[in-house]
Length: 164
Image (cartoon, rainbow, N blue to C red; front, side, top):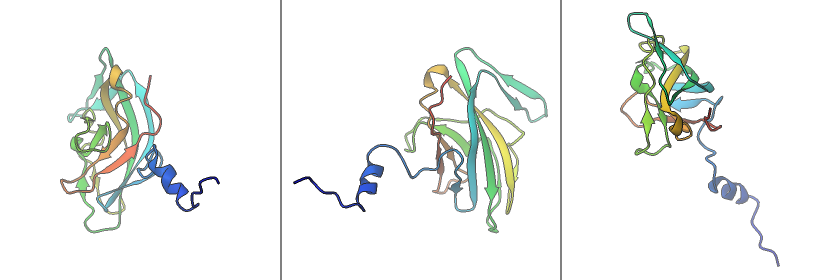
């Protein structure tokens, strides 16, 4: 007699054996602290990245043995009166995994988005660039988004491996 697995248990077994199916991926919105949502709309890797300094001039980043992970992101505020946040460099991190002890990288400074206010019904499209070594490109598989010190960080899985 063959072993029988009830059909309603089969999806649970498949979901628990391997790939993370609960974390949003590229193109899927992630809830951030219940008052915001963020969606990674694109990602790529470049040898050069640009950021705008606080004085409005452009700074070019380029180093041997480094690459720049470029993420397009849409950040939205919901209808709540509690929705009010000014974006800063600590809000977004490239992360190895979703654990607290994960390796993390902050984006390069870019005042095209640093200082933008996310309020009720706000929708902002921003581009983040993260400097990583060529060797560590495949290490960072998540974008972590954290607008406050309160629990509720959001993670978005960068589905495809980031590679040259």
